Image 1 (cartoon, rainbow over the protein chains, first blue to last red):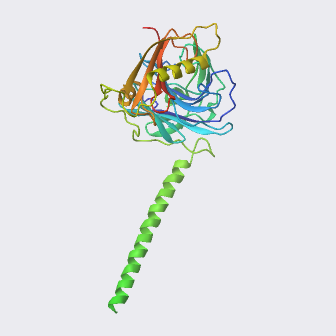
Image 2: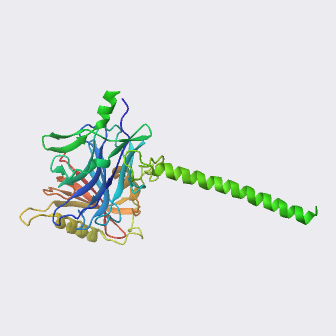
Length: 175
Length: 167
C-alpha cells in the first residue's frame, strides 16, 4: 500500500494565552505510524516568549524530541502555509510558506496519521491533548499528487493525545 | 539592399525572435505558477507545493571541535551559555516549589555534528554550546526528564533543544 509522503495545511494565528505553552501547526506521522507515535511537526509556538515564533520539531524512533526554533513568527490574525514532505533517505523536509526551513534526519518514511491544530501543553506524546482542531484544509501528498485529507476520526489511546487518523485509508478501501 | 539595411533587418529579426522566446518563457512560467496556485480541494487557497530537492542537506561528515583556544567566532562563553540555559529553564518553570533540572555539562559541538544528530535548520553558527540536563519535571518542549539545549555561540539564542526519556 502506498503511504503518505507529505502533509500540508493553512493555519490562522490566534492570540495565545500567556503563561501557557502552546504549539500550533501540522503534525504528520512518520515511521509507518498510525497513531502519531513518531512524527514531524512544523508550526509556531509561544514557548520562547509570549509572541508566536516559527518552529519545527520531530519525534523519531528511539531518539526523543528535537525542536528547532526558526527565526520570525506569524502575526496574530494572519494565515500561513505549513508543510512536511518526505525527501528520501530517511529525511523529511519542513516548509513554512513554501520555503524549506529544516530537514529531519533518521526519520523513516510511511505516514498514516496527521493532525492540524494545537497541542497543549506538550510535545512528548504522552502528556497533553490536541485541541482546536483546524484541519479543514489538511491535505496529504501521495505519489506526487496532493489530496484532500477528508474523513477520518479523532482517536484517543490512553494518555497518547488525540490524533486525526485519516481519510487516506478510507480512500484506499473504497477503491 | 545596402549592407547597413541588411544589418538593421538582421538585428530586427534577432530582436523579434528573442521577444518570442521571452514571451514563450514568461507565459510558460505564468502557466506553471497558475497551475501551482490552483487548489482543486480548497478554492481560493494556494495549492500545496511539492519540493523535489533537499535544500538543507545534512553534512555527510561531522567535523570535530579543534583543540586549543575557543574558535574566534565563539563570542558566547560556556558560563554565559549555561546562564542562558538556566534563564530558559526558569522561564518555563511553573512554580518555585518544583525543582529545576540539574545541568550536567556544557560542551562545545560543531554545527555539522549537531545537524547529524538533531537535523538541519537555517542560521546555525559553526559551533554550538550543548547544555545537558536531567531530572526535568516540567514542560519545556514536552515533559522530558533529560535532554539538552543548544545555544548559539554567536548570538546567545536557544538554537535547538532535545528531550529524551530516562535511559
